[in-house]
Length: 65
Image (cartoon, rainbow, N blue to C red; front, side):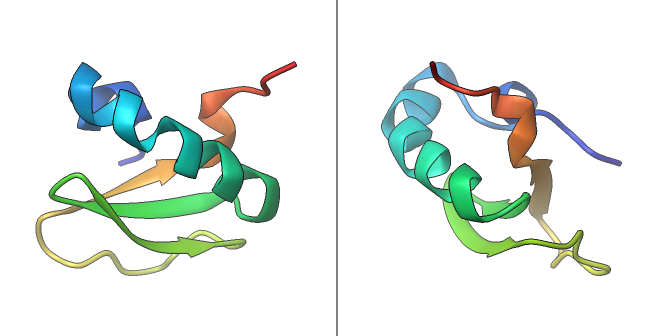
């Protein structure tokens, strides 16, 4: 099940990762987050996610204008 970044990270973690995720969003569509760290980014939706990891769709972050 897809989750948004807000469902996975605390406000503190999101603020810390926001810039990295926005940069990834330019190049990738999906990211795998493990314990608040970006473990993998991909253009296509990964078919398998490691136990304890969360899959997020990066376009759910929205564009910064």
